[in-house]
Image (cartoon, rainbow, N blue to C red; front, side, top):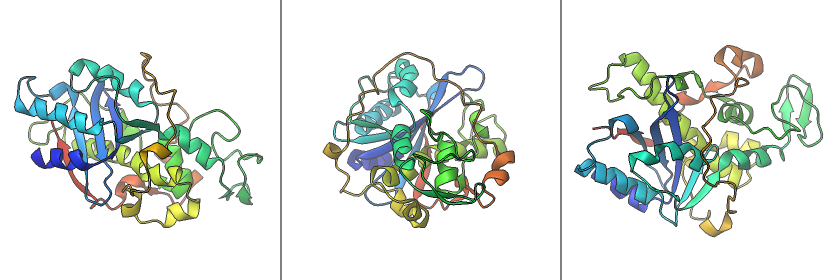
Length: 289
């Protein structure tokens, strides 16, 4: 844990995601991915239902970890409004509102970025589609106010598939491989999904904020995508005024998300995102004991 804290102390950019239990819909897991200037990076999984005693050293260290993440100088990326995702976890007393740092709703930024691009559609036989004026039934959300799911964004920008099926799981159960009652195969799928769901946000942060072309994204090495160069400065990013706290319950996954059985009909060459090279992840750190 000391190594993790030292790493987080000096890191200035993070991606955060959460998972909720499939039965209760209560938040059960917080995933944090550090985005350093140079690799390695760390993915931390915080199991809210299995936190240590509040008067223990480990609990104090978990609080300190969140203090490091939400320092005022930091940038925190999420897919959707982070304060809405984290509000249900306030009662666990591991962080406080208002959240510090610059909160970047990458989902909103992604829509602006992708709909300014020209990209091919094999189904329509168009060489290039301009989303601002073209009609295409094979690409989602064009010409509407709908936001992009993280799954859609990976498929249509870089041909990579993030299977969302594992999100409907019992995330309130212990994930520690040494003590979990979950079968080893299911547990492996859950931990891998939780890790890569958070990494996917980090994966897109530079192309969106630096306005890369799609070809540049597809040709970039993953180590370049998962780091944060000093050129991205805090004061260059717009304030996200709509990331205010409110108490609405998070909605479940939308029905229009693409499932694995439909993938080959959309992009035959798409590869699973969670099969990408993972050496950049130092380790998956489970802070439940």
